Length: 497
Image 1 (cartoon, one colour):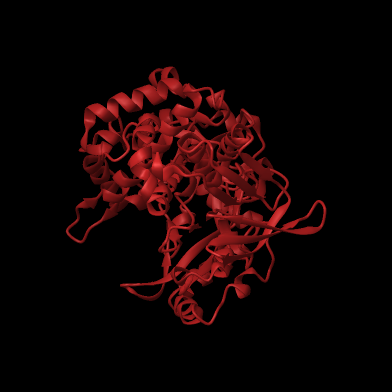
Image 2 (cartoon, rainbow, N blue to C red):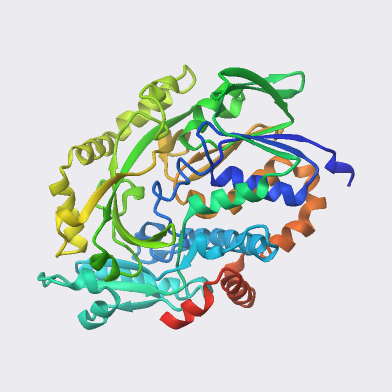
């Protein structure tokens, strides 16, 4: 393995992305030295934490914003197919980890759960029907049902249909092969497995600077437990610090980091504390985003399994805070404005006036106003049954694209240097669900010399690697059922259908 000479790797941030990259590298290059630096006291505490995201194994089974209506009225499903294929890669890698005893008890992080989409109004019902017809052509969405029959909907959605008086048309789609993923638990399980002689995980260590020095990266780290500064060097640095990635990427000075800004969006969830209400709902139900709302604020009512307990969340209510991390500083946004991105940021500010106004309105909502939105889903909802929980901070990327200066990007993106020695992950949803796909992209961009040596091992871990699984129905069926079996999703999937 001539190309596989030993390397020193630094991973910044102990979230799901670093956990995934670290786990992949540990299988592919077990003798490489890996150091992880995390500002907080344990793994998976920021964006990956189970209370900071929706935990929807994002496979485009219920998210209406992944299927858009074209001007001729047809439905474009290409994004839905892409996101689903990416989620299948994650399922395969998690199955590999479970099958090889690298993590145990898959039910601690993944549970089978129906995914549903719910719409109101004639035109939306027509859209949902067309969407199902379009998706049915792909094997990835097999088993999805549509209904506008109130009796059927009562069976699927008892809590949502109870006490509903409006005679407005209403319809839903349902598919039983959806999942609820506890990304916080998954991250912690992966880091438990990562600990070894070659992997050093340092909590309460924040990275303050990254500089190129004599052909390697020198990383300046503040060890908060002992209040001292340390300097570490690495051949490759991955910046996976969620909202904290952009300021660190800017410190590297790589040209690829210029003309990129960040737009922070905060979120709130309502959490049900009445066990009787929680029991009446089983599934993740996504609606349509309100006009003017950003794609990540699609309202949804989710059954979640947190600490193996069934919970019910409604949200997210978007909000605005200048912090880039939940535990960040109010100066975060200002500190990332640089001479090379100020015009990009200003252009976005002017373009996104509507969005900014929407976010500020959301921040001003009272609990009672939030409950009105909950009641659009659950007509019988009572304020005393619900608590408000602050979710994670997301930082959307702002950059110059073909559509113009300062375009707000909704998605996840890897920015890497031309020599592949540093990579950063920016952006938000569908983030965690597609972590394996995103980290494979990092490996391809940053370790091209090693890829041919690694390919066989990657295919052992992720059998559909390099194949568009949506175009190979037999392969999809085989992988879907074997991963369901390994991850314990099988009997339950069969029972519900």
